[in-house]
Amino acid sequence: MVDVTVMGAGALGLSVAWACLLRGAKVQVIDPGGVAAGASGGIVGALAPHTPENWNDKKAFQFDSLIMAEDFWRGVEDAGGLSGGYGRLGRLQPIADARALELAQARAAQAETLWQGKAQWRVMPAAEAGAWCPPSPSGYVIHDTLSGRLHPRQACEALAAALRAKGGRILAEGPVAGQVIWATGWQGLMDLSAEMGRAIGNGVKGQAVLLDLDQRDQPQLFADTVHVIPHADGTTAIGSTSERDFDAPDTVDAQSDALLARAVAAMPQLAEARVIRKWAGVRPRARSRAPMLGAHPTRSGHFIANGGFKIGFGMAPKIAEVMADLVLEDIDAIPEDFRPEASLTRRR
Image 1 (cartoon, rainbow, N blue to C red):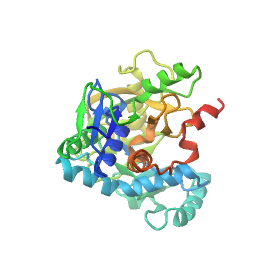
Image 2 (cartoon, one colour; image 1 turned 90 degrees about the vertical axis):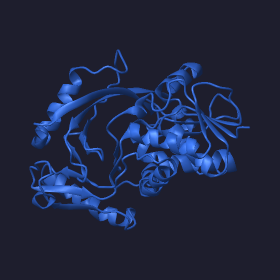
Image 3 (cartoon, rainbow, N blue to C red; image 1 turned 180 degrees about the vertical axis):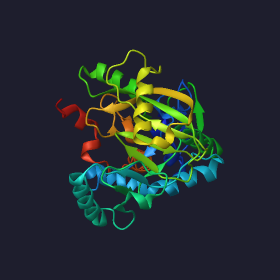
Image 4 (cartoon, one colour; image 1 turned 135 degrees about the horizontal axis):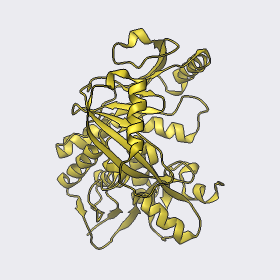
């Protein structure tokens, strides 16, 4: 007997399966590619918040999820014995000029209220940030304490281990039974768009680089639109590109070299680090630009959890909670902008 079938063993699928299992459901996950076969098998893992201003449901949802993350990933590790490399070590961002400094200070004031005292967004002299700090033209940096990091593939493997330890099954194929949740990544969004005859989601390719550089206790950096993520295993990830048009979903090219060059220009300390690996994958992006959660638009009685794009891992703890609420208890706490209808009605 199976209560819940999740189609897709990426970040969202595994997280939703885990939340359902914790509530006593008998759960199976089906994915012919195996665990983290798609974009969830990446190397970056920046769990970073949107700016604390112009507050909306999406930002509030993300804030709640980032606050939930520590307990969520600790529970996963305790159950399965594997670490996803989670750590809430914050983030540093250089401030370019006087105008950007004024804006950062205004955001710091808003964060005092919007972040409820659970995290800080503050402006500080770059000299106080220490050696692991990108050069800042203004002499100031933003330091937020809400940002976290994990290693995406390791986090998925940790979720898979936790599921199996608690009696869940992960299969390459099998009969679909119980409540069904579709978390099938960018290809699922493309198939759904073709089925409905209109674009409601697509894939955006990203390339990233992994360095042999151990800064595991340092915060992540964001400079010149590049993320620099020190991982718990002693590597450092650089990411990522955003490519709407691409020929091959999983090949690296000169854009990864350009990405690394921009990272080194923004953070000269990276120049001597050895490249361990280059990675490419396609991330699912719903047309609404928010995760797509709720009743499946074409499969009666089924559900969808897709479109995590760049914030899937950061949103995963909260997404898992609201989807378990909906599927198991018929409690609907999904924000309007996250529903499939939002992608159906959004104009280009």
